Image (cartoon, rainbow, N blue to C red; front, top):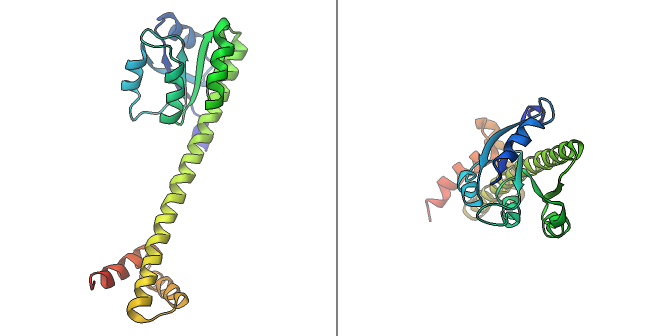
Length: 197
């Protein structure tokens, strides 16, 4: 988590060319940097494929679309915090649509303090999402390990007549003796017995 406190990258999506300049000039000191800018929803979708930023700012409307749908779509595609910036008269309507989807909505004009707070909130969401994503990946790997170990136990029970407890102990002992993981020991067992079928 220590890396989260490094400078955070912001990706700006805005058809208004003065908005990215405004963002750059009004960032909290040293905490953030603008590292990309798309001028339309189409361009943003192409440029963001396979990329992730802690914060994405969408200045609504865009030249080729409203932008609210893009902001909502980005919550599914990136672990970054999404901020939609809209005119004050549209803020309530856009907020009702986007906030339930996890997008922070900021009505303009806005004070610097509100802008900074939105950035901090979006970065906090990003950090949390990255932690959840990492934990999910860890759990998926653990689940895959358990499936392989259980298949190996079944093979030992079927071919060597072991009980489940004996098979479990056997896999643990093999892993210890060979100084490998239980998954690797299970994979070795499966190579031996599944080739017989």
